[in-house]
Image (cartoon, rainbow, N blue to C red):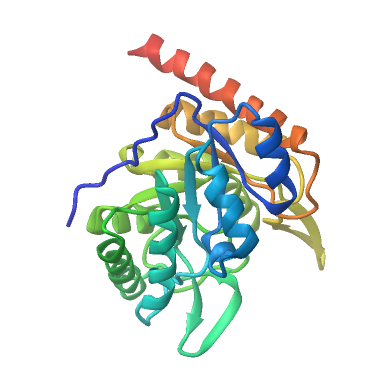
Length: 289
């Protein structure tokens, strides 16, 4: 077991946005005042134009690599080819953090275009930890692991999701990427207390937080909340983020927006709001110290 290490971020502004293709040239041309940028490494495996932009932009901004294809929760070992391609990007842009999810998306030759949920049992925890360890050994660094958004829950769960995430970090030394919108989605879909979830997370293990928009969709006589990343952060999620910021401190925070892309200025305004909340929370923490 390694000691959990938060990634160090060599920049004064803790708030970042996702680097998505509609913004490549504008970011290079205008150099907006933002602390860092996040990319999904799988979008850059093929090289070409995308990788050229990433190389150039990473010369101006710190980068976080947020993977979606390692399938850390699979019973099968993490793909060495996938790890090799991520390692190429680590060498290219020297990210301050590398992360993926506590979920699965591959089994044998089957690859699914989704991040599928895990039952929270000792068996799945052991499989997740093995793949986290393989990933960290291959990359030569600790990673962050994100709590998922889910739409079903398993009857045979042996522990809560917060307990599952804490234990994965304790056993492997990885950090936690706490997605605040995902916690809210869970709370609505499964009837959980999102503030109690945050309070149950080991504060020393949280190395990054995510904020995003979600969509409510009818499901029979009820509503299902879907983590769509296509609209502004909702007020209830901002409230939850304020609570998280007071508990975890000045943790790097990402504004995620992955479809129905708005003007870059919209993302920058969302980032400014997150920055204000972090600053106010830090003042409260300092006053209480």
